[in-house]
Length: 216
Image (cartoon, rainbow, N blue to C red; front, top):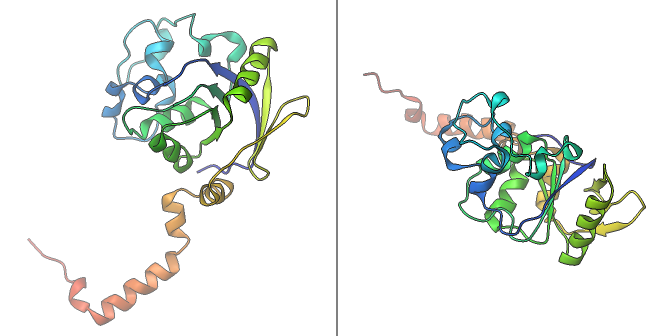
């Protein structure tokens, strides 16, 4: 998992409450058994004018010109600004996969659905909770200034605007540790690989029958 320490990026405004995980990545794409390739189908039903299918070539699909992520000024955005209760609905881990693979590193909202919030941290995305009035101000600035960017400093736990305004945010200590070091659940476990190997070796000495294999 990619480390998150300090990130500066273009902001895209998704001005909607209660964006659910089926909107982030529609159900038909959950058929994939891979963890990659979901970026082109993030917000699929809003981005395109037709119905997308897994494995489809998206390059010739008709785009919805009214959807914010299709507007030229927000191309390459890596920070998503949105409204309350983002990520509600079913607890599909494909949602943060899709957002990450689209190119987002951080999401700013007044609130997140709990399971989605935790899934973001496990997949290298930083969900940032600011107050509704702070989010309103950031929306206004994003609309007013073409190319509006923010800097997210996870070590200091602050969002910074170009004029020096700072928005502090809270983040669970363990989740912060994992993001700063790029540790997903597997990487956390592998930190103890030597101890795991030692335990397995000792276990086989004490219980050698566990090393037997059935031959059929």
